[in-house]
Length: 231
Image (cartoon, rainbow, N blue to C red):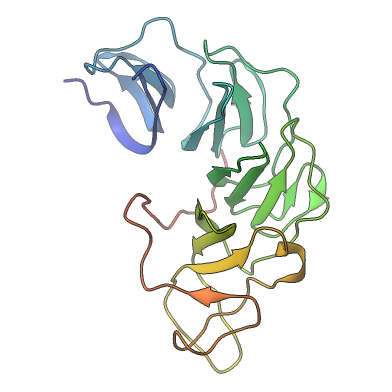
């Protein structure tokens, strides 16, 4: 079988057609792979790619330069310490210059056109500073101090829109007097530091300033609930 033993939580397709796979598995394509691996377009294992992590990989995203963002619950990636967030070169070697670190799981990424990296998860600290579940990094891995919307529970889904808005999905958001299931909200990319992500509108025509609600995730994105666990 070409499927791994365990669960697959994240997929990303490179420009050359190869498929990056992350999840909670220790075998992929019939061979040992620790939580991350790569397949050729035909589904056979890429033997040249084997960075390895020490725990679950929940999110993979590609940058324009071919580098690979990896997030999850791990504390080691590519044989070196990485606190739940790291970056690989296209060949699978660790990018030693990128090491922001998070205190709890990283579940999703979105890479902006300017190269900045949106990060969502179960963390309350990213790159050594307080950030509640949602943050943005500069391309070099340093924290973007101008972006701090702050959610009140984990963020598991991020999507960029062409109009410069950021779709954010997760769980457990609330507002006094409202108790609603977890649905995406939307925040402006440029004004996120001024916008609270802790609210949820009771209808499409009522809501917090600067936010709006959609009824479902975009078709190209899967939003899932994640546990806040560490190895």
